[in-house]
Image 1 (cartoon, rainbow, N blue to C red):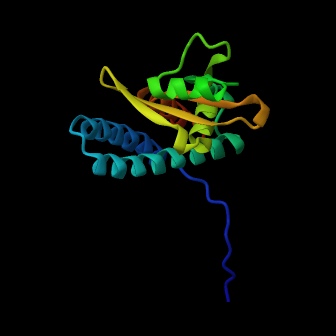
Image 2: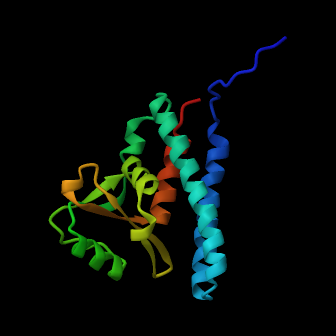
Length: 173
């Protein structure tokens, strides 16, 4: 009688490329629903987009950890971050739906860090911005060291998709 067990199965990059296309589509759909104030569809599309981003996160992290994706591609500047914020600073940036680039702890972050921020954000303290037909996620979360205060990341969806697409194409078979 055969023994069935779980084993690590390597995923091919082809299906992962479809995730980037899906995320681009969901972003366009979300922006269209924002324009028509269809909050029910905004929520539905958002759920699908988050599932897609989590799948991208899992695929890319696993490929890098397995040595099939060079750290170079995961180091691409993909988003911006303000860290060591106090609550008033975080709330002001959330209200403005934009990071204050003059903040002393402002910096660019890599694709890997942006994916980590997506995975570890606090939905209660996050929002989005649509500006000039561009879609941004404004995500906040607690620092690993609570004394540092929260962080706030601004992720341009198009830039995230472009970085993910380049990284996926570079995965070694």
